Image (cartoon, rainbow, N blue to C red; front, side, top):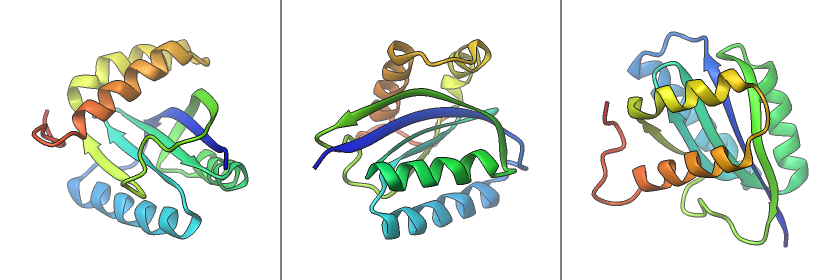
Length: 139
């Protein structure tokens, strides 16, 4: 079965308190599990970066909800592909905070267009952050 993998970044507009971020993660995780969507959500301080994977119809419906969500704005889709395997198959939604990515994500966000090469670089950084032995909440 082929899957859709989509990577986007958006500017955070919600109060980014630890409690608010934990609540967002819990809601995303529960919803994604029901929809058979996997992925990772990163918070950089000013931006969200997210990779979501699943059936095309489920990803398209989720993106409509994300674009209408007032917790963030200026959603930029960086990369969309059809994939045979999930990259984040272990998590319905893994969360990490990495302020070290903020300047890089800011540059990509300001460009405001699809950038598959930069998107893959960011996903590689996200994947590294999610490996055992790496702190998910480093600043």
